[in-house]
Image (cartoon, rainbow, N blue to C red; front, side):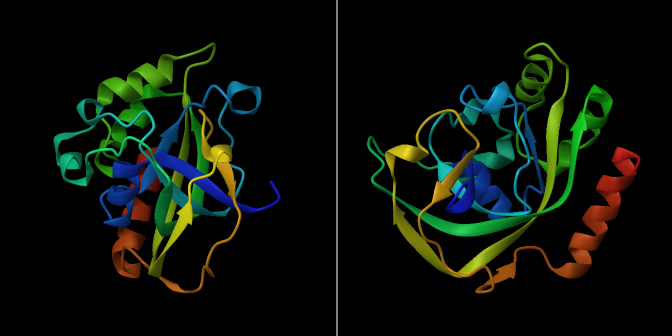
Length: 185
């Protein structure tokens, strides 16, 4: 990647992360991923909201408020958030994945399906700290952002420093402790 790394995720999930309702990402890998598997490539990255594959019925009821009707053609996208990886792991124990239920907005059935997909059982975990830009940035949607891939390069973005944490330090520290206890770390 030569530009500014961005992580593609359902628009509703990005907004849930931006409101403090989700602190982890659980991924298997997209069809267009390198070697067909997800890789946590970047310690800091922009959250690029996408309507692609977004499914209200596969999300928990509390995620409904983050869903909006999808436009027929995306010509531009607003970037409100970026994330910093706190912990990255591969979870091949379903009970550990299940124990993290309160830290994400997806229904168990979609996670179980992703967990069991492919040759190896498991999901990649990204525990992230999300930051809100003081001023959102609107960028054109480029064809290079299309497809089943997690990572894309943005051509230009504002400075990471012009942002504030979504979750206050003290609360985030409590969340961190809870997640690490559940992971056995």
